Length: 433
View 1: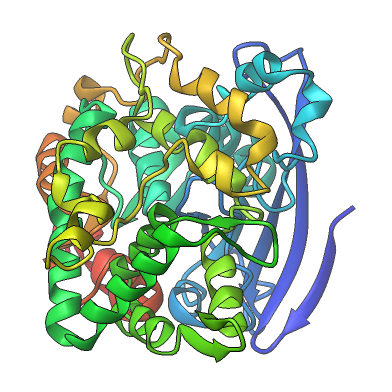
View 2: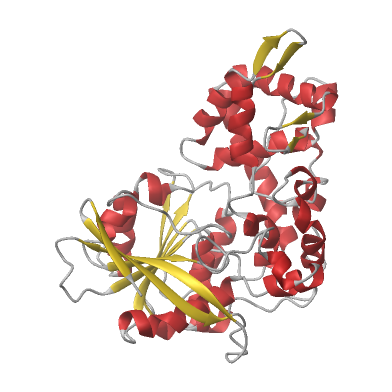
């Protein structure tokens, strides 16, 4: 039974749906999907078109908005919005260290998780769309990985989409994970260099923290083992509009003087564990490289292997000389399953997924080349998370898709400049700009 309630300027309704785990076997096992319907409080009785929002990730539930912030307020002028928790996330039959053992051992868990990629998410949308819209197509807004899902939607079921809007999420149609990370590390280095140019005092601060971690065994309050590689992964912050500033404030008071000498402060450790823990989104770590699997080649811990091609990211070598420590970014590594207590029980499951060789294609280039769905995409000029070159190549491969290439925003532009970003994309899709 659906339940409705009010927040400032908006009426929300909890919606729950049952879908097949494997859409190729519709009579088999089912899972539950959760979504939150949002409509402007002064338009509740109107027959509005629908927009479904696909969150970035993979592994994150939809935003839990309060009221009508960011892009949502703009969307509610034209649409009823469905904020979907993609399968395995949020309140949609969660997949994590607590629930996955219900499947059995690592082999059964890995087999289960093969059903949590973009193609299954698209099939979920198509399964619930008739219940939501009465069968009418809906607009799709995909942020980051949600954009990957939107391109898969245009490949698999374009008849379900009235308008496709993508923010920072145009994937390569054919790149292996190795290609993705080979393009990523130079981008990450550029972001780190720009950070140090803005905050030159952080060069020595980062080196001091890294040196401490190389010579001390630091375990955070939640049981996370803070290694120098884990510290470097805080560079994921640099892909957001405020990320450089957040990283700077994190580094500036890392140490405190104690009877045993200088140690990493409780305040620093508390912040770091919140940034590094995968307890709230373990699917991100488990299937992150699988979202690039489309052929018989295993992903095989691609980010870890490709990192070896870029020795400037080696902390020990940087500290042995006078080089600045390079942070890393949006990548998953096998050591994370040793450091993070939320991931440790899933290490063997992750290994099996990394070794898998039967991934199926997620995108249909021929169908995209014949696309008839109005579509627009925001491409961020030096996006740290999604390669701009790959994104623009894909944009050219989707018939009729219009792009807005901008350096005004980083990857989180739909949050930082939501109304303006959505206005621009809607105008492009409607051929009004």
